[in-house]
Amino acid sequence: MTAIQALQHSLNQLNQIILGKEHEIKLALCCMLARGHLLIEDLPGMGKTTLSHALASTLGLSYQRIQFTSDLLPADLLGVNIYDRNSGSFEFHKGPIFAQVILADEINRASPKTQSALLEAMEEGQVTIEGETRPLPAPFFVIATQNPIEQAGTYPLPESQLDRFMIRISLGYPHAEAEKLLLRGQDRRELVSQINALLSADSLEKIQALVRKVKFSDSIIDYVYRLTAFSREQQTHNSGLSPRAAMALLQAAKAWALLEGRNHLLPDDIQAVFPYVCEHRISPDSAGFEHPASQNILASVDVF
Image (tube, rainbow, N blue to C red):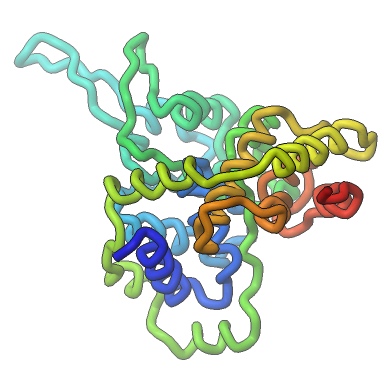
């Protein structure tokens, strides 16, 4: 089975679990192929947790769900050193972050101190505990869910942490036929428990290497630059796109092209991922399903 066939089988399996959300599922898989972290912003009950568990199971990766609450401490996330009286030394007890896929559920309900404990893990693939650096499993992905920021008892993610998420999506309500199938069908949690792993950590890393090899022309780079430059010129946005955002855009577009069965980049690939890569960086307060700033940029900048 080729890499493209394996990816298509993975998408088909995920679409059988999360009904009527083919585009969002493709974006989520695209994010992981591009070595990014995913933010899902939506109301409770939309399938955020189910999607994250299904992704981990389909890709054959270890999975941990962490419920973020106001009293969650960084040590609850990372782990602690505990004194062993028998050996007379401290023994490290790993926290739940030591898994390949982490679901940070309702991340904006945790305090800023706990939220920031994720930063090093997301950026470096490691954590530092009491001065000692410990590597995290590879590959390592964070999928965070976030309630709308207008809900009481939440702490909006700072821009520095939002920037660590390559893609932000919102699942939203399913269309009528999908919801009827959902009501008639088997419980989604039971279906997730029956998922077959179609990839493994090793095969996923090989596919990620293929993403890096997707070819692109100078005209594509020029298009990406003009999009980012235009975002910096506008006074209607909170801030323009940074060089890191531009690199994230390029990587996500390359993964999208691979999912489309191509080894070269088209402007269509840039446009397909641009709202989901860039909106939360330009306008952090916008809802996950609204992309007014990014759509304005796309409409204002010519492809060539």
